[in-house]
Image 1 (cartoon, rainbow, N blue to C red):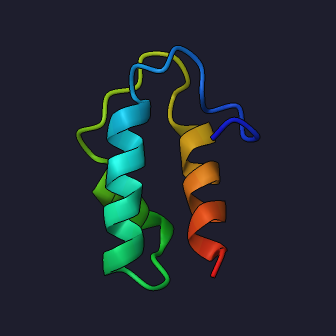
Image 2: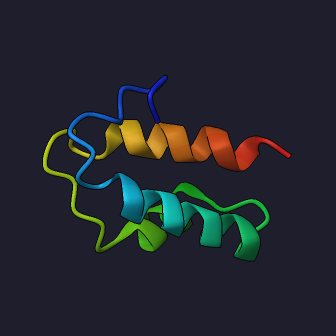
Length: 63
């Protein structure tokens, strides 16, 4: 998250972190639409979500 500029105020970090851990366990190679679906409901007040999407996509590609 930090390397993609997605970690600013920290308000959304716990929700994103837990959601991404669940997603990693449940989906092998999610599409961007599947990632967006999983992240629905996580409120970010700072970034507009693009940094989070980049960070999650990179994380999900790591085996």
